[in-house]
Length: 449
Ligand code: SF4
Image (cartoon, rainbow, N blue to C red; front, side, top):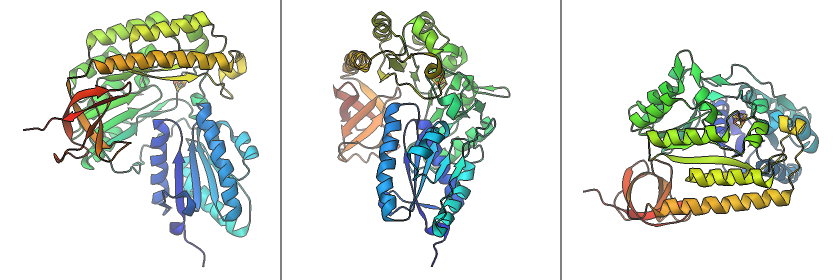
């Protein structure tokens, strides 16, 4: 007897950024509405979907590795394989040629078509047909406004407030894979936040490629984040990422004035040298960035700053790299995501510049910067020893279910032993810090009397 759609089990693997994690939740919601069911176990799945990222080479190579594994699995049994997300959009020819096992290819603006494409792929496998389902059109309007993402139960959740990007940084594929910038209706975002609060979520992270340019009628980002922070039950609101070129003073006012807006800003630097910044198309200077950091710190001294940095961008010299190194020293970030430049197909840099810094030099620069950042992070964390911090309990620690893990308001991870105090995920708990590493604070729970 033929299976109905509800008997087909879908397994989804997600690569890349938080926006991709959020998109997976949107995809789950769209598929669930059409009767598909999900499994965490890929071995018993009838459909395996990979929600992919094209931004970093590592994620990109991982997807090709997984596709090679699936090739073997597909020889053994009937299986529908789908590639979703940025790689589907940006590398459609490459993916279909190098991975002929892919049945369905769907870009980030075409997820509404996915249930139909999967249904057709399943039907065509029954008949031995090999037609591929491809939907990769970019949209000027799609924001999935009416879709309530299908989330795992928890304490923290993401809400995408906008999609796409108009900045065209020369190294970045996002404007090509996710299209032009569109902002969601604020009322829909606030309704989603209220729904999350009713389900017991305590923290929301607002997502956008450039949240500062959020605009919907007379709503800007500062008004939106305040509206979300005002939702009863939501105790913490974070956001990522703002672009340093247009950081509005009104957002700093909102952060300083609202206790529910977390004191953490992820402010991508990318490079600390003006010529390299110009080549990257970042539209701010080193001085402009450092001035902004000063303004932020003057407004709120306890704000934690984190950043993204690319080492070895096209033609970057040692002296220019040292400008980045010194900028990292000057700012003193709490943490930094540091990457080697890797050329991404179809970007401006791939078309116009030569990727001429050797792998050896790129790796050496990454290592030096990572070492520097580790030392800075460790020093900052050491200064917390003896202090008591208020932590939102997120769940078990990664390494041991005998320990809890949570985060401070400014997004530093804290781990402590469970000690029978009745603490639960979603609680706010005071933790006295006693030991630290570069990435984590360790401490003891202070019993609340
Ligand atoms: S701001 Fe630049 S780096 Fe960020 S998504 Fe847009 S183009 Fe990419």
